[in-house]
Image (cartoon, rainbow, N blue to C red; front, side):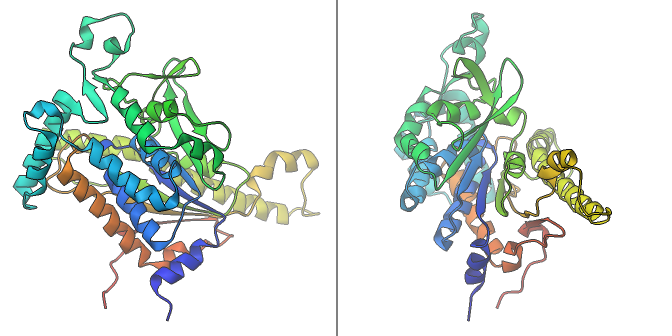
Length: 396
């Protein structure tokens, strides 16, 4: 008898494009790693990986390694950047051992997270960023020291260690797309391996969140984190032409839904959730509108006397007249009660383990629903699914 996973894989093989879309969210990025690990274990291999900020970093590690090495490289990268900084007064290995041995009790988890968040703010994060010795307010020369609180040169070295950029640019079986914001023009820009070579600067730029991190120059122009404008590349994938039947795993680190705040710390956390989740909702809504327009146009043409358009109109409307379908499967991290507004910069062994395990569980639950993976009806054109908004299946 075929299992749920067998049925899922059969459905997935029917999509020419299988995209993994990774949102920005700092330390929450471990959730994306858990999602990918479960996909990998199931035998599902995305052929288009796109990301913003920490999502761009995870995407580059995936695209820049052989399939059999990707999970191990993700793990090694995150173990590296989740090590406590030296400034906490204990060797990193000792602090990691101490935190890893704590029982998973709510108060202790909050304490561990707050310690991780304090360490990141005060000192930086090993292999990722370092606090600058002098305040940027002491400078006015436009330098990195004047325009950012942290030095991200450690991240450059870490990325070069874990990402094979030559592989990204020569391997046509996997496409990589990352987004960044032009500082001077204010425009959003996607960098796509299908169109241009991807370098370490593109990944650094996508994650250069101001005022913490300095802008990164690409071909003489400064770029900041893509999340300033859009925290997900979903719209880019859905807009790219020519269209193909596309299955999208949209992995979000911020949930649009959440409880009403009770404290100021709750308010700060809720602001982040809403701000950084909104573009995903917008992208999904836009593709639904476009697909309704396509269906309406086809029906209108069918009602014309000769069932055809004048050549100039046919050319103008051709992008809206294909019959390709989109299936968007949302995987959205659900913040835990003990998490606070520092959840996106509380790096550490305990938060990493919790985020990673959450991704594994959510992807496993999603794989138990083969109906999510069926191609949508071409008369409708788009379907969206979210395991957190569906009734639970009975077990057994």
